[in-house]
Image 1 (cartoon, rainbow, N blue to C red):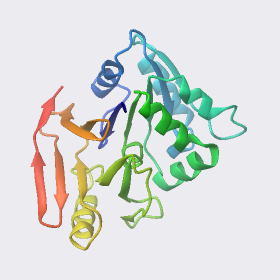
Image 2 (spheres, rainbow, N blue to C red):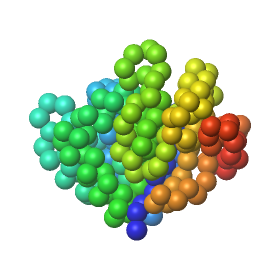
Image 3 (cartoon, rainbow, N blue to C red):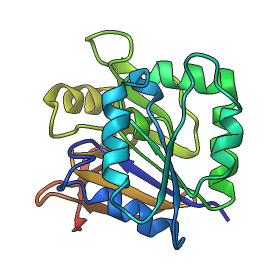
Image 4 (tube, helix red, strand yellow):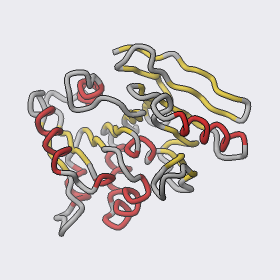
Length: 224
């Protein structure tokens, strides 16, 4: 049976208000979960990696991170040992290209199919779906035309944090882009396998939406 996917719209992470970090460790269902941070979309910013270790070093888990730049040593094998894979935001197109070169796409699917938790924000949420709206190719938002396809349909992060994303996503879906889901900053969609379970939020008022050619359907969120 496939594991959990937590697709986070954006917002607070690696600090006291980042309640999703406790949630993903809880979802792992292990006494001391092994969690790997994958910052590929931001080209492994050292500051972000340091923030990850500072945040998860205070929790009862075994943190590590995945390096794909330079000369990586068996990165796919590293993911085989994880209970949680936590993917950062940044450039979705670059993330997917590098993952495919190094076999990370197949390793992530294998981890998910054996029951691991896959989580991430922004690009780290876009990647699990068939398609998304992205700024990977410049300041003008456009459909990516790609995705891992673990989950059907499309995704849009930062739905309340970036008004242009909301306009572009809804207009694109009305024009024939795959219908899908959108998440405000600090809101996330939880799936067990491919089954949608709930929207969760780490901020009052943050929520998710189902977006079709007919319009938006707001989805109530469980406040953590």
